[in-house]
Length: 214
Length: 214
DNA sequence: GACGCTATCTTTCTATTGTCAAGATTAATC
DNA sequence: GATTAATCTTGACAATAGAAAGATAGCGTC
Image (tube, rainbow over all chains, first blue to last red; front, side, top):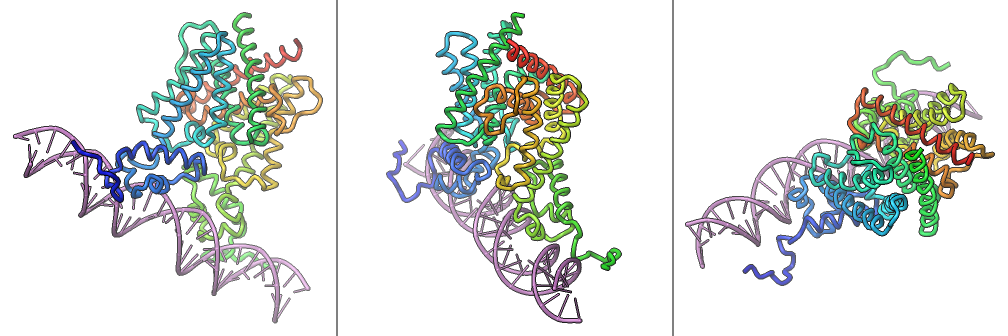
């Protein structure tokens, strides 16, 4: 039984370097933003040589893809949680949108990485699965509100005006917010902004209902 | 009278290096995207030493800010042109939104630079003026549709659900489109997508009218 | 328990980048 | 025409990503 050596200087093998690198990358993103991310700084924080990450993630973009994947998983979880707390279908859809925007405000650099970066490896299976799952929370609830049968796939969004509108309004608010286009940032302003977001999404939900019943 | 020397090997002074650098930067953005942009490559394309740009733009971000500024000016012009061709206020608002998305589809990297980059010098006066002008085309037309008096400022968008919604839906569609989230890209697909965008914005405009009259 | 295999990690090297400092060259001004 | 200011070059520095080659240690097999 390989007894874990008790704290040598620096054990040659890290133990769980992949997880440590992801955590370090998340911290760097939060502190310095996406442009402030460097693979070497990541390695430094994990107390490991600058070439070590390559064995787990290939290159810098591979690590970023893993970080983005975990970001999608957290976003999915956030949206599901708030949706389950709501009884009404319409308010559930609004709550999902608010959670989406709140996620962006809480993790702006991560959100940018997930949605606005060309440094992601889209052929990565885990990544696309995580992105798909997040999308389906939104599209599934929308289909419920609209009284539709099956939710649409992502690539069909470009051909369905209603789904496009619903996703776009939420995503647009999130994007504009973290870019500082909607006024100053800060705890107080963010809360005020989320109130406005909730109001705007309620109006949207009302419009969806009117359209599908009219 | 300083007669322009007829084509020496390489004239020590470029003549209009600032413009040449901006043009080179735009070309690089179009070819290789924002992450593919480098200051040295820019200098190479302008046939100038790697340190020359500093005298005109300070640093790399200064050049990018100038490029973004000219991007906002073009976007403003595009939106104004299509709006003037429309008679009805509602269709003008729709046309502005379509122009916004079309601009993003035509210049995706430039659009990302303008809206999703932290490499811009927001204290630059020309830059903020250009951004403000673009915003006011949209908010002005929205105010007209809603029967409002004065259009709102950008920082008030975070407190006004209707304006927030209107900007967000257009910006969200543009963003999702250039990130490939709405299906494959390409001439045919883009045209199909713009039709969907137009349909979606028409539904939005109808909703605005219903709300302000109800 | 010994052997070998393989994953993990380090060191070293190359090419590239942005920025700075100092000098060269030209245009503008008086 | 001389001085000043703007423009551009050369050379250097620190930092980066990635590749190559070697060191170390965990793991299965016999």
